Structures are given as structure tokens and as C-alpha cells.
Image (tube, rainbow over all chains, first blue to last red; front, side):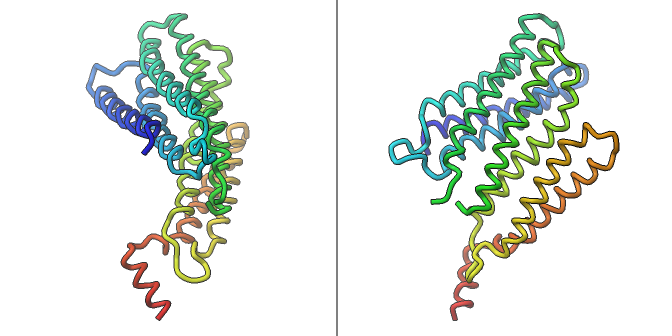
Length: 134
Length: 144
């Protein structure tokens, strides 16, 4: 399993644990924070499931070329960085905006949205040519 | 990778792009409100990400890697799986149009098309879910 895939899979597992802990936190009476519910959902669906899919697909789909079997290495790492940085910004600033809204916090959410979007677009660019027959 | 899997997976990537774009617009609007109307995209975001992206990718990969059957039709009766591709994507298109419709029935139609599509896939591929031992026995029986 290549280093990039191991990083995706390990990050997805960490996100799963964080997401589950937040899910428990939400259920404690009096501890629920506004904005935490969408964070919980996105940690599980994007940080866990989608990130796991990205990592495994980059590993197992038909090779890109002999020289670059998994496409450009830099693109794979950019996807990884954008996805996790975008989620981290969301994890911090979405609940923070619920508690104490600010312009900086608002722009951090915009940056988070952009980074997560770029991660997805990067993945599509990387994997599209690899969706083919033998 | 068989042709049907390629169609399923490419369709799932298109829905990933649509779903992510809708989600990014919603989150951007949360940060810096610019158009309250963006919230109308929420059902589209959920439908494209769960059904269009994840479920359809799963079907495409399953059709590709599930054990094959002995005989002339290694992936079973493929008509069921082709029907699934058509029905699910038709359902998704109707589901995406539904929030902009004034009638309630498009959502029901969309969910029905998707459900029938998934059932068709299950019917077409059910026999491919077997243990290697069972597969070997079937192969020997067919050869003998």
C-alpha cells in the first residue's frame, strides 16, 4: 500500500474517531454547541467515508501510466492537504461561529469550503483518466 | 474494468462535483451570507453525495470486482445492472429538479426510480455473492 493511501486511510480513521467522540459530546445534556451537528455529519461522511474512498481508489484503480502509476504524486498530496485542512477549519470555525460569530471566522468557513471543493476536484482530475478498461 | 462500471464510476464523479459545489456554496453562505436562496440546494447536496456519489461508486466497483460466474455470462444477466444505471440516474435527475417544482410528486417519483434501480442491481448481482468454495464446486459441477 503506497504512502499516500496509508496517509488517507489513517487520516480517515482518526476523523472517524473524532466524529464519533463529537457525536457522544452532542448527546450530553447542556453541552451541545450550535454548529456542531453539521460538523459531526461531515466528519463522518467526508472525513471518514469519502477520504477512505479517495485513498483506496488512488491505490486500486487501473494505473495512470507505467512511470506514474497513481497519477502525479503532487496532486495526490494536494488533495490530501486540502481535504484535511478544509475539514480542520470547519471543525474549529463552524462551532465557533455558532458561539461567537466574527468576520474572520466567516472567512475561515469560506476558505474551508474552497479547500474541500478543491480536494474533490483534484480527486476527479486525478482519477478520471484511470476509469478505463485494461 | 467493464464498460458498465466505467459508466457508474464516471457518473458518480460527476455527482461528486455537483454535490461538492452545492455543499461549498452552502458553507460559504454560512460564513459570509450572500444569498439565502442557496439553502434550496441542501436536498440536492444530500441526494447527490449519498446516492449519486457514494452509492453509485459502490455499485460500479461491486460490478467490477464481485466474483464472476462460470459460463457465458460471468457478471450474470447484465440487463439488470444496465437498468439500474439508467433508473438510478433518472431518479437523481428528477430528485435534483424536485426542489424547484411546485408539486410534491417529483420527490416520490425520484425515490421510487432510485429504489427500483437499486433493487434491479441486487437482482442482477445476487448470485455473484458466494464463497470461493461454493464457486469452485459450481465450476466443477458445470465442467463435469
